[in-house]
Image (cartoon, rainbow, N blue to C red):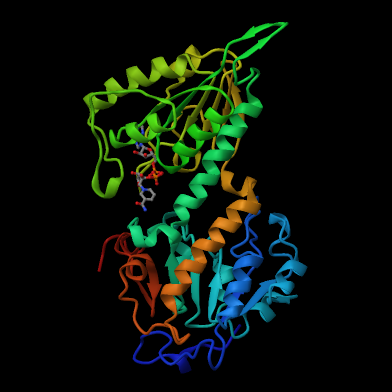
Length: 403
Ligand code: NAD
């Protein structure tokens, strides 16, 4: 276990006087991601080069970037130090950059006062959050970075949803027994495939763009009317329903039972005529809406494919099995999780850029860690700090709503 950072703390506010690049470099540590199937890494050599130039000491755990095709020697050339053990990586590390949330074991390896930045997936990670609270770790959850213009470069949800949408379209095409483009050949004319995208947020728009590039006829649906314009600008058809379910902050609100029945009817007809369906519909903090019932799946053509990007939060299709690919009624249902990890080179590159921008908020122009997290972006994404869970809904989950 490492030495606490208590000496660097003043009145419970982190890192006052923690001298940055000018005097004692801030040590940024990047562990190897150990979650099953995770291929990404939280930083890449290009970003390391910029961080070391600004005065940080960057340490990378041996092999951390290998599965994303960033070998240790590229990190060394960029100015990072490769460490052979977790203990060596974390000794004196002030900031830890991660992709996946830390486990309880990961938290126990950190010194008090360490700042951890990454996805925290609070609902499914309460034990580790409680441990971070008790061990006075500071954690920033990238999923809570507000979607304001200034935070765009730190929006890891968007960068990773872009990767997920791309992979979903490619996976759909790869598993489809048909060509996607129209072909006129000496052996006859091939009609283009129809791809339907349900949920036209960041992932959905990327899936639309990718399926269009592959030559398919693309249709899309979203409960937010504003999405229609973006869908049409990509050359796809937007399915219109007399509902506007745009809620707060640009996210979707829950539909009423009547709205849901109407939506169901229209969506079912579109699903039944599609060769590939990619579903991305989500409502933050809630179970994913059910858009495709098993009756609708039974109406689809044999050989049709559904890629359910919402599998992790319950699935948009009734027959999806999270983490699995199954066949029902001759339809292939892909519920594989963590699709961004399937393009680890570029999803890591984008994620690393998000973290680089986020770090710039934590350190002032003199290379000193900021004393208070009053910046709107830092305040919104601060999950745990100084022995307290700062994010209200997560605190309620931990305490059962009791103060
Ligand atoms: P998300 O992952 O929360 O949801 C995916 C999509 O599913 C959304 O477009 C949502 O409207 C849709 N959806 C929800 N319920 C549905 C239903 N029953 N049927 C069909 N579709 C349904 O979304 P996201 O990709 O994170 O984007 C959410 C919003 O944030 C969008 O408006 C997006 O444009 C906006 N955004 C803004 C910024 C920014 O300004 N910096 C960055 C990224 C996203």
